[in-house]
Image (tube, rainbow, N blue to C red; front, side, top):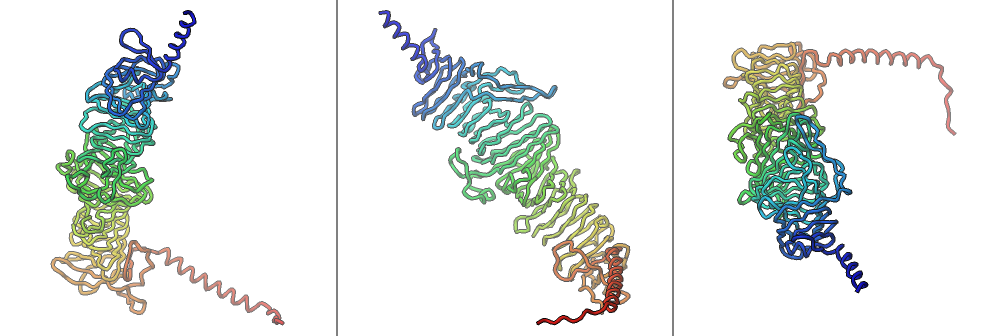
Length: 638
């Protein structure tokens, strides 16, 4: 009997390592395989690492797991947790730090993360909750502001389904699987800290990415399926970067962005529609579907910038964040604590095909946008607005950047809002207007950059103090109530180019280049034109100013100057003046370009004359020296 008792005790100790042992009450103290206890809905107190091998089908667990250890969920079925579980890693395996700097503006910093307390293996599904407020695994000892930082980190290689209706945090998320939330589940996952998760987030209703009290990063996540609202915020003086492509799966989902003063949100991916029915593998069969409405408006998606400083792109890509038109996307700028700002930072050409407004959600144009736009000075940054914009604010074009209004193709005309108190263009790069059918007017233009009229439809300038070159390559540039006197040069570089100065405050140009056929319109009564320091009163049928000749005609209220071919030296007279100096092209040109200006190329003329004199003296010197040298005896070849 004594030996049998020892054998029984040893067997019990061995079994305790792999199966539950009954403790006081209904709770089971266990480690190892706790599948039977969980399927029996017994409370479990972990005494080490445990595993639940979930068989096929859905199994709802109404017990509670507590104690110390780690939980692995494996198998092929779905384990649903109906109540909160509170176990933690053993103290000897805890080294994670949580700090709360920031003083009066506290934020959470998680350092040296613990290993996962929960692991969901590939093939298995773990569901938190049954559509209510309970069912989460977590411990919350940190007293973090604004939300509760979860001590129990999680690794998801299978599927984690979030069926909770409360604000909650999952700790540090790792793994390569799927984290998904059902549609219409009005709970919110709060993502904080750096999460090495490399799988896919499927947002059914609402996710907070970062917040006023924590920054966040998902450096490795493959993509985000958005069927609800993905909400981004920042602590004070922080930059939050979201690198993922977003895929829309439902009508009207959106990315909503907030930020604090001194903070910025950078979005480097593409917000695309996905016509794949599989949320775990979003894709779009044809990128053109982002630009065309589909039945039931399923590809309609948007972004609301709520007083935030937002940047699309980081200068390393030229795939725009919101590809589409007014029928497939919406973009709103709102003023909350501060006005919004949206910066485009790409390294190649991108096209914005939708208007930026300030309405609520889909109703974009019910109010002007309350924010400013910046085209960043990254080399190659070339942004096209192929729609009429509706924001009351400034448009800044940084040095080396280009903003096109209009795509130059049918249906792609663009414009900027005018008439708002804050409307203006700060042009330190290149502003190019190329509408094909819709005439447009510009708000006040300042800066050191250039303005180019390149479309068949006319453009009107009503306030111009920019100092760069003005080019009219095609169509009409109408100067009304202002002048181009600050522009360092004006080039009419195409034969169909028209510069309309008939309503200008002054007809003074610092320098002028023209090609044959290009026209300048002046008022009919008392017309005059000043180029550089020369002013010409226009009369008769011919005008010569500097080295440029025009024919003069009258049409309606206009005096029309049409550029004639540049004269050759044989045809010059005192009336027409000297030949124009060679001119550097200021834009694409066809025909013969003539150039006028007050003291243009004076240095060229001086150095040119000096060069001729020096060259002549050198030739004479070498000639005399060669004549005075003794001639060598002739050499003969054999």
